[in-house]
Image (cartoon, rainbow, N blue to C red; front, side):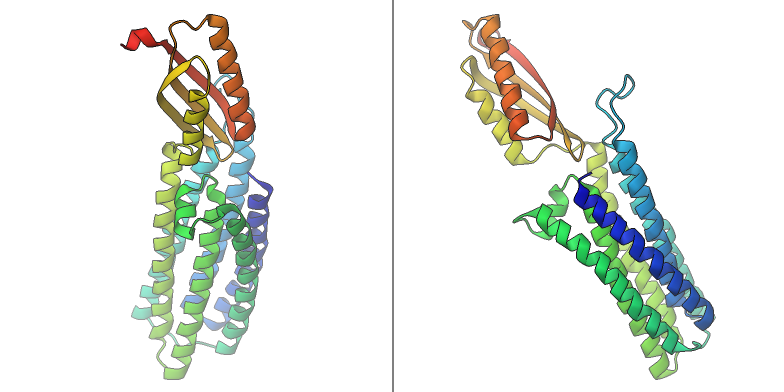
Length: 304
């Protein structure tokens, strides 16, 4: 994981820990379902950041006999677990609490405390979101947000980004629900706000699960990298055709490459060996994320 990703996770961890504490204190005093839902949301987010840090540590373990390509894809597994936890705990509890509050409405106590806590939470979450956006914008380059998420290979960036975005949206909804409940005298708005928070968390979790699932299965490298690999192969003197270029991300910073090429019939073993060595050195120096390269070479006449 890049240092920027780790910085994003630590920022979110500190912010969510502070926010969760203040939310639970406010929920206990005021009896707000929306505030309780937001407290659970912050606890889930805090736990998620711990899991992401653990996943990063595990993914850094060196390759061994059982895992010859290393443990890089373990970060994808833990990001998928984070998405499930957001859905099961965050969304599930929020919707349950909202429905319970609609069926058994209770007037809010001391709503001003809720406003103060929500205001502080927005400041804390806003700071974490600003850090996440800053790192994400630097990583995505000229791509749009949706395209960058779809093609991104480091899920920790967009997991934290969308967690923080969902948190800000949830805080604004909670603020609106409490305000409407105070203005109208109808406590049902607090329960409705909790349900809406759950829906946002559920939608966020489904999208994160979808994006991390493809990484967990095994995504190819970016098309630009695949095209460069094909181009570099064709520039080698013994190569007459490139049959197939297969790539797979074994982690955010580990690309596995397998290339099938046709060699000229007159090429000697020494020429082929030299060409493969040149190709290996060039492709790894151009794209540092490429760690392992395998070349399947066939004589041109055998494919005729």
